[in-house]
Image (cartoon, rainbow, N blue to C red; front, side, top):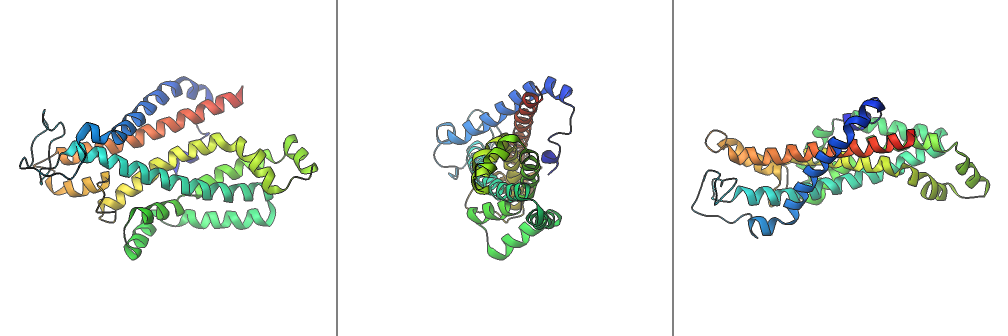
Length: 283
């Protein structure tokens, strides 16, 4: 993923100046989306699927984001869709980061044949067209939130693997690691007690970026009709609105804005976290 590969690409002097503002803006966007998703029943009612006679109502006081072809409130569906997209995105990111951390730590710390074998496996997953494989897997085994989480997570771990491996290669030569080895600590204990705590800031960056990427993949699959039809995710809302783009522009606009704002916020927030950690390490 381009965001992950660019973790150390920008000059630090330039990043220090813009990260606080970008991080604040990104955090505000993410917090706004989370608040809307958590308090959806208070903000838009308990049932996002409730229908009315007010079909294709323009955005107004009664319906701030208008209604759809069945008279359902678009605001309610966007807020509840945020719940679905955020949960699937975060769960997929945690699966991907867990797998990537385990493989990256083993490859970076153990080195040798283990490193070569695990990195060849990582490269194999990197060259696989992720979207195409996800479409094939979901089409063969069916839709569902759990399947989406597993498919997205199992296809997204290589980026985290490379980050963790690179940090392990640096850390394994440090004095505290050598001291732990001389004290007889096992590789697993050293990785868990000494290596991973030092890699934690990079994992936080990776989780944030992977969440945004997973939300995007889930929205893409739902837009193609391969998501969970029982859950009003943003991708499903966009898919249902595409035939009404000319007559009811708000049906696609507001879910699209919510999706774009979430991805932008997560990327800015991850950049802020990474920038502050790099600046602290530099000092």
